[in-house]
Length: 194
Image (cartoon, rainbow, N blue to C red; front, side):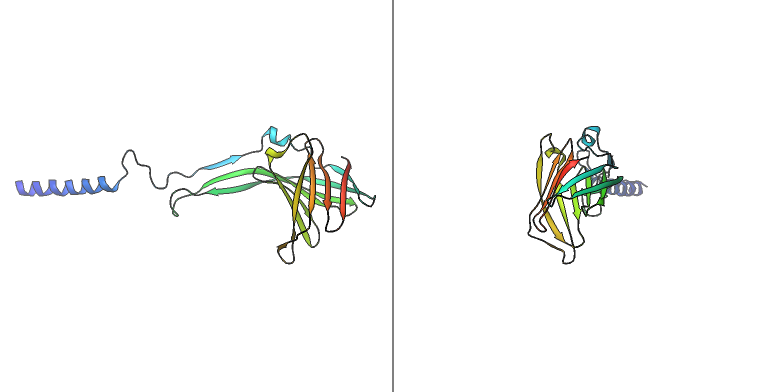
């Protein structure tokens, strides 16, 4: 009878030892951890860096003297999603949703057309032509009350390559986009009023 009890106790001891060595110790962290899902909206301070309501009418004077008029189609809100891995490939990912919006400015007079995006990750002004598009990237932290000029890189849509011509776009917190210049097509637009 004692031998049977000793065998059972020895077997229980072996199972408990195996569980102890295969489980996390109090000072160890599990390999995966818990995934988080957060949403970060634009703050009032960030929104104040852009003077557009979304339905603005902007007047630009072209280099040839013509007036180009564009009107905004409203703020189209969306979320940029970023995934962050932690642990191994089988672990769940953290998800961060960053609020953003874009305003498409369409021509009423002339052929100037562009999209303004306010994003927490990357702000951009995109000018779309029929055969190419230009993106001017800038950050919230670069925006000041003084004029800032950004260089753009045009992208050829038909060949999926970058074009080596120079583009510039100027921006102020008070007036938004104040100047757009394209050496590719000798285009230049200066803000008259908004």
